[in-house]
Length: 125
Image (cartoon, rainbow, N blue to C red; front, side, top):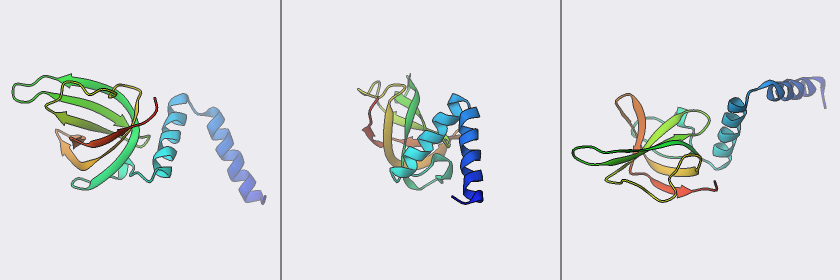
């Protein structure tokens, strides 16, 4: 190993030892998303059809006057996107802490990044 490589390795190792749990978790989620060939939420643009993967941070049923919605916040280590299923009160397996891969058109609504009625695949968790 050259001196430059060993300094880089040492810096990365030291950073990992001193990082908090949330930082390490975010780094691991970003690495998993990249290895799965999924887009990073932070790099998604409005109107694109994207595939994202991450962990559900929260799941909320929102009763509305017109159409009830189920909303889930998906965190991939780079950012959060809200997955919105219109007309649903509950979906089996959609629960906080679960890993999920979702595909759909990336949009923006009320300042939030959203994907409406995404296709999804549940992961372990």
